[in-house]
Image (cartoon, rainbow, N blue to C red; front, top):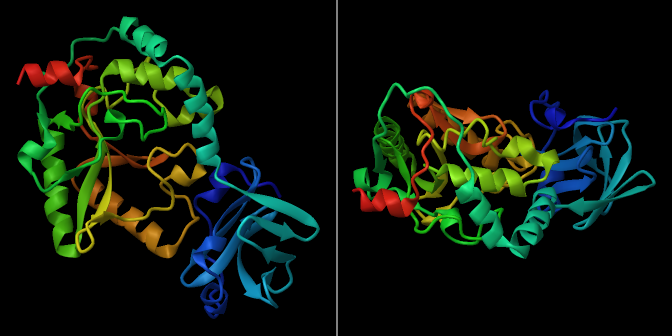
Length: 321
């Protein structure tokens, strides 16, 4: 059978077998092979090497000889490599589908970034009814300086490949910001902290993202005709930091990755990666946030609909404070 993106998310647990397969296979073998529409996914679950896709439901890989494994007791034989997997007679090349989409966007945006920005700033935001709440954006780190920032859109290390914001800052509506601070406090006894990549986002940036992203990947960006929850100051993009090392943890997919690995229920990667992803989601939802299904890092605060679409740039926000 052909497995859709949804099939790569919630899947039934596999039969428990000894952990020999995972013990004999390095992390480098994990990944996606073949096509984005129906990738073969090699992942780890509870110490076992697993396979899914290309006609296979989640199945334990049983070691045979060398780099050969059998999918379950009677399934096909797979030969695993770092750059490709042979499934029967079919050779499936390794792909980083998110990086491939990002490279396409980078080429398009960098051809004329000034024109894209000018068009975005000249565009008109959608008209809405008067919001029920007045905007009260606050800088998150002003409430808790221990929360770390890595604001990707203040530099070029993002899926657009160019700076979008004039400065690195994270603003949220006050109730949402206070909720993030409570999450930070709850995570600390467990050895983790928060690293924020984005929060309030001016509407012009949402317009730029939509225009630059291929239509086939529009599920990963907000429609500017509706505005985003980032525009309302009620969405935050973040991850976990290991307090012992000071480094961000590894999740099943990268931040802002335009691929199935970004889904909050994606089954690939390792048990530890999925556990950390779920730990972040559990603490955020406990404080009134909801994870965006397509993006494990994106959380919307419960009162987002009560605020209007913001258009102020970071420079303008700083000048009014």
